[in-house]
Length: 115
Image (tube, rainbow, N blue to C red; front, top):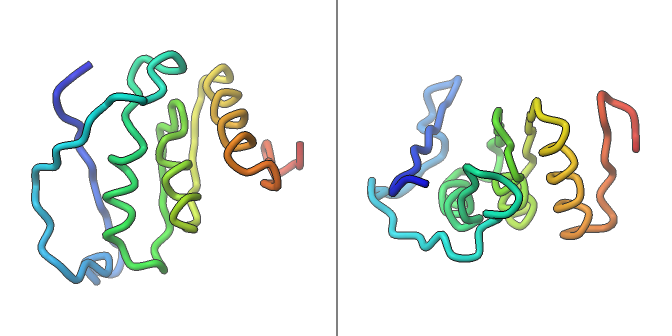
């Protein structure tokens, strides 16, 4: 576990992602309560939540390394659309279970097929 986690925000149209305020480059967020048992490199939901909350609501969220699904949980809590990828089937199931527990009405698709 490290003391910091990088967050990258990208835009394809140069609109500065809808950020309308100055953002500090240092956030103090406790890692207490993160999904430590589910993934070795997990981080607390508050970290992606804070970053996503800053963005314009029209932005899509892409998480290319979903791990335990913290970014997907934060996106769902903020009613944002999030696309995630995870190669390890073990962690795919961790994410599915976590999202179903969060919202049992979610439709889960694997390779475009409803599960």
